[in-house]
Each structure stands twice: as C-alpha cells, then as structure tokens.
Amino acid sequence: MRVGCPAGRDLASVGLGDAAALPKAFSAPDHTHRAEETATVLEGIGSTSIDGTTIDVAQRPVVVTPPHAHHVTIAGRDGPMVVFRMYVPARSEQRWLAQSRD
Image (tube, helix red, strand yellow):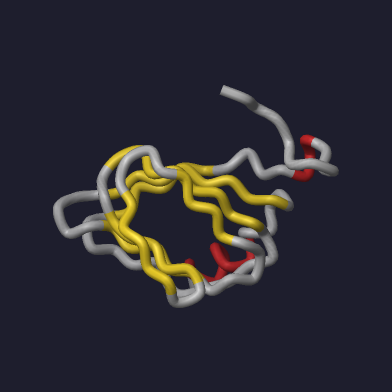
C-alpha cells in the first residue's frame, strides 16, 4: 500500500480523517464543503449520491467526492455502515459537522 500526500500538498494540509458509524437507514443531510472527501466503507452497505448520481457502496470501495460537490451518504437498512473519511484541506469539513449538530 502506498501512503503519501496529494501532489503539491504537505502532510499538515491533509486531514487525518475520522471514522463514523452510521445507524441503519441513516441519511446524512445533502451538503457541500470546500474539501475533497475520500471515504472507505469499513463495514456494512449503503449508498452515496454525488451531484445527483447515486452508487451502491459496500466494504472496501473508495469513494472520492470533489470539492463543492453536493453529496449524501445513506446507510443500508440491514445494519450500521462504518465509514472512514479523509479531507483535503484538513479541517475544512468542520463547517458542515458543526451545522449538523445544531
């Protein structure tokens, strides 16, 4: 496995990421952020919609959402979906996470 930073970026600009366990049938709100988001499903199944195109996801695929793209992640109906996400630039996802907690 190759580990590194996107071309032209230093390590501090890459978000180290987080893991989220989405409850069954949970749907994140449609949102955008200035970060490129890379997500890997660690467990479970679900779907993701990026700018109106929906794809089914299961363990181990990598989904890359471009900056400013509208996107939604939905956990499957059979159980939770665990997702690991990384953001470039780092911490740019905090804006929408703070809004979703309100």
